[in-house]
Image 1 (cartoon, rainbow, N blue to C red):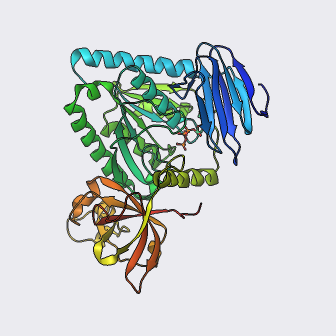
Image 2 (tube, rainbow, N blue to C red):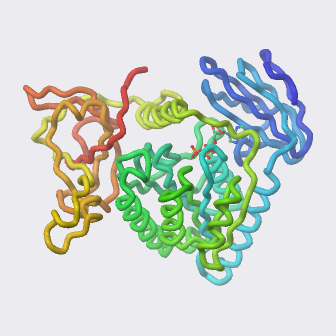
Image 3 (spheres, rainbow, N blue to C red):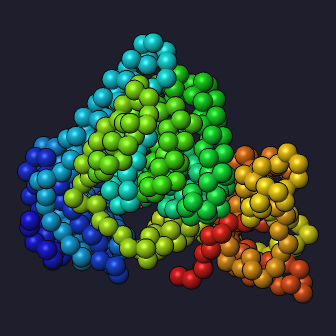
Length: 422
Ligand code: ATP
């Protein structure tokens, strides 16, 4: 372990297979420069002499396979070098996936579909980023699917999303997400509506199959699927459903032998289940830190990672839009119309009347044109926030990434709220 507190412009010399881990102070930025050798941040190679700036609160690991010197400028909460990292195992996992892709190329079949699971704070998102980056660096176009509705690696929290990755992630800003496919879920945990969550997973898998059939390049590159940290009880059933829907070939279990053994016992033999250790660098987050990270994701959507987007604020008349939410509270079977199951109400499209309770809620703009049941499985185009409501004038003020008018008039209400305070 090296210095705990870094002064301005401190050099760190890393031996091969070592990692410099640092956490940026909560009020300042930290600049990092690769002075000598070769290194990468979560699978993205650093260019020599290039200066990268990390935002307050960022948690970063600079890994080197061959040795390097890295300079940090600015205040860090903590910065140390570790030689104990699971990176070689992660690289071997990539190598195994690459072999499966080569086989898929030859046989013109499907590449590996990998589900990454594990409890909270074990580095699932980071492993997905690493595997996708390595795949892109090997000339592939893998699909990244994000089922972690609590955080949102591709889109805002409360959504399931997928995107084909053609470029490695930017060291400072993460992946550039061109034309992602996004479905509205509306809550921050699958537990809030498991029926809807499972329906959307199945729909997402269907669309991915169609997308894969359109291009053998995408098909053989495979799919990397990130999940949330809910692995017990019904959370475990959600993972099994995900494995089935996406017809995964490999499940990477991070840091939990119990989950590994459970999956081994429950899934068919052709699914390879691999237990991987977590990195000692992954930082544990409190409930509060998780909520902050969620807010940050929504802020990023509107303002950009570096505050370089300029969203618009405008009024929308209640009469211009139709508001819905998905899922009604379940009633006992005896109270339901003949032939209807209790689970049906969980995916029912329910009209919502505009009231003051909408204030600060995130609304998804549906790509659908008609307010029928199809809305549930239709993708969304983007998001707005209700920042004001005037019941007398029957208008709401919204924060939107694009100027008025809204691209479509069907809006889906999320449970998730966002206060636009800087
Ligand atoms: P969740 O349960 O919320 O989905 P997760 O298991 O996906 O979390 P990550 O989001 O991948 O975990 O990691 C948590 C934090 O730890 C992130 O801020 C990430 O940047 C940081 N982190 C991951 N690996 C390392 C490392 N080796 N060194 C330092 N920080 C790291």
